[in-house]
Structures are given as structure tokens and as C-alpha cells.
Length: 251
Ligand code: ADP
Ligand code: MG
Image 1 (cartoon, helix red, strand yellow):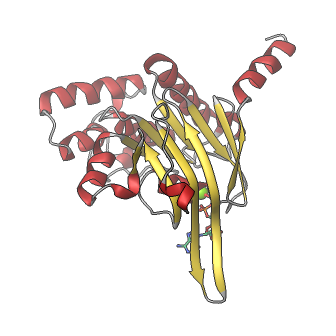
Image 2: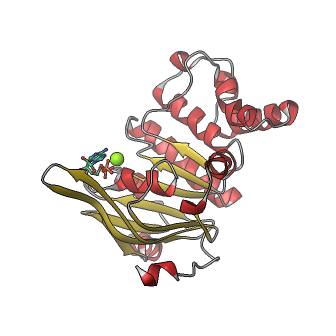
């Protein structure tokens, strides 16, 4: 991998992977999940990964989110190679740069909506008063000002996912990684979540990386990537194509 050792990442990308691979050692051979994936994401974009179940979408998100390690290749965040991060740097990266959203909300059951949204700020030991004001703002943005004292069990599925989105936004992350965020939602709630993501991107330039089966959600992508057998195939013109489809439909 001489080439890889000397690879100079482009600082213009927020996230870049170079020849990223992931394989599991199995009895009788290697199970290759990701194979030489080259991926780039610029700030202010909404990248969406689609592809059949088992194609490696979650594996990829976990690797770029530093929840898992690749078996080959490199991941760069703001031009810095992640495998060189110390444990402390990874913790800082999770706290300050990333927001996560999953199919299941992973809210803490004993804490209210407000406390859940505040949690990342508490962990990062940020000023309480300022954090609380931000958490209230975020709950307002996701339309839950009337639900701040509710426990997760007192919220609907759609509301829980919106609390999870507000929590992901709490520490002003550079990137939100969302793995099937609408996977458990009905159509109406999925639509609300989609509009919120689009608004956050348009109004605040929030960058997203989303894996989804939901074709409606995938429709908001600025960059669309198809994951097939662990090799990501870029489809860069999703945004332009959508515009031309809209025009041809007369909308
Ligand atoms: P997707 O999110 O696209 O549905 P995943 O990334 O979850 O796909 O999984 C990709 C493949 O990796 C699947 O075939 C899955 O069985 C396999 N896989 C995931 N985790 C492990 C593991 N710890 N050991 C072995 N295989 C795994
Ligand atoms: Mg998955």
C-alpha cells in the first residue's frame, strides 16, 4: 500500500475515505464487507447512501463515525487521518464534531426530552445556562416545545426521533450521521423528519450523511451513493436530476 501511505487528503472535504475496506475473519475465509471504498463529502451537503440490506451501509457509517475500525485504507476528517487519533481524540471527535441518529432513538428512558437533548452538552461539561437555552431552541426547531418535560415513553415514535435529532444537534456537530433514521416511522412522521433535515441543511448548512431504505428521504440528497456489495458507486448528479425531473413534471 505504498500509494496509500503517501496519499495526501484534500482539505476541501469534510470527510474522505481512501480505499477503505472491512473484512471479518470467518472459519473458511475472509468475509469482505467493504472493498476499497473511495468516498468524499463536502461541508453543507446531504449525502445519502442507499443499497440493499446487508450491503455494508451501517458498517461504512460506523467506520467513518469512528465507532469501528477499517481493516484497510484511510479515513480523513477535515484532512486528518482518523486512525492516528488517540482514544482521547476519538472521544473529543465524538463529543464535538459528530451527532448520531439511529433507527432506534436510544434516548435515556429515565430522562425528559430536555434532559436527553442536554446530555451531550453535560458530557462535554459546557455551561449549563447556555446549553439549556440551546436545548430549548432545538426542541422548538423540531416542534417539541410543548413536550420538554415528557419522558421518552410519553412521546410518540416520531416525537422521540425528533428529540434524537435535537440531541444530535446539541454540540453543533460538523456532521450528523444518521443510520435509517426513518426506519421505524410511519409515512407522516417520516415526512416531518425529512422536512426537518432539509430545513436544517438549508437554514444552517448542517451537513448530513444518511443511510436509508426510504426513497422519499433519499430524494433530498445533494450527493447520492449506491452501496452494492460493499463498493460504493457514486451518483453525483442526484441533485441536478431531481431538479430536471421537477421541471419536466411542471412543478
Ligand atoms: P446494511 O447496513 O447495508 O444493511 P451492514 O453494514 O449492517 O449492512 O452489514 C453488512 C454485512 O456485514 C452483513 O452481511 C452482515 O452480516 C455483516 N456483518 C456485520 N457485522 C458483522 C460482524 N461483527 N461479524 C461478521 N459479519 C458482520
Ligand atoms: Mg444498516
